[in-house]
Image (cartoon, rainbow, N blue to C red; front, side, top):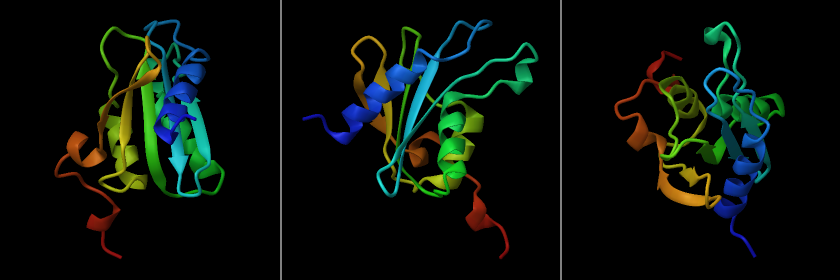
Length: 136
């Protein structure tokens, strides 16, 4: 039986195939795990007006939020390039908003469809700014 990280890696690889990436040709898939263990997936969707492109991580997170969830328990992502993909700066900030500092972020290998590296938002975005910095 597959563990949760392996299932998330497979789901991220599957949804990566749905990516709309006619400009960069770089497909990305993501799977986020909510606190209730429901999984949400997303892929990157590019646009001719590049600034309107949405990343896979944010697509999956926004699906989680749209479903009424607020906390990320884990996230898995995969990119179609030769090297492991990693969240861009915008995605890191959004992950910071909804994930605990030590929530696992699984970087997956598109060839093996398995987790190749595990990190967290604290490592990817040190000394970050978040909701806890704002006055209540």
